[in-house]
Length: 391
Image (cartoon, rainbow, N blue to C red; front, side, top):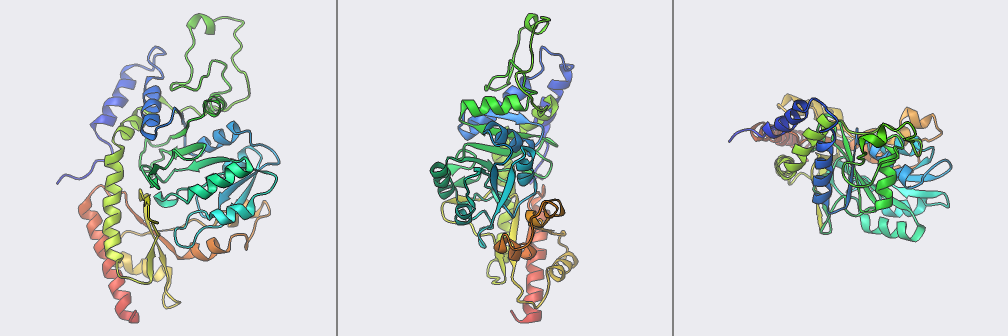
């Protein structure tokens, strides 16, 4: 069986279309429009707005929701810092909510505790490819008039109680960065079913350009209008967050191959799942009933009881032929950038206790044979510690 190809002739053919077009204005934007139309169709929403990456998508979303100075945005403490940075970009204050110790995703009850009169938005993260518990978050949002922006940078084709992740919040953000399920090297997508939010987000990321509209492609203007000396271009202050046509071409091909790409990651994750089955001290991320995981990574909690360390386990795994696994990010509120803003220990005790125990196994293997070797190395490492410590 041939190895899985991350980039295929489809991506190359779409990129060639762009290059053959010589970047002429008559063909500029076609790949972006096709990408947005296809992506929106998959998630069953009316609007998709492509961006240069999956961080600025959240900046645009918060701006579209009217979040600004003095407002608060609730984000999980366990995630990549971009989610909280987006709040800072609109001069709002990130408020960190703790996570569930078993699913590792944002805890709706702590979200409830963190809501104040200044709260304007919540950004729940589908961490490692698993949806958070979204129903209670959406109920809180309706109760307190909050905007919910799903951060799905690590989740494509995951589902929550029969609904596709990305179709539940008011808006949803995706990333095409190189480590993600779908990639064009860099890029991002913001989706919504709300025309007003779509228009505001697109205009914010398009330099406040007057002809901007919510539909795929974003803006078309007759040449005689653009060439008119009286043409006023900018209705508002905006940022230049538009994706390039080359990135859009590659992202379009990846989007069309979405099921194939996600299925490869799930297959690899299943190998790791089998390798750890029966091990009581290496606990995988819990997938509740009714959830479908997309496995950006396969993540486990190492409960050693002090007998050996995270570093001991990693060293032995490498010796057995495994790849070096990754740690979870330092809790966002404990990163230097946020400590300098006055955040510190004790805000999210579950996250702070959990984070040092987590290990992330790669799932982006193109060869299932190599993935099987890494899963076997994990099983061998588990066996070594089981025997050494009589676990």
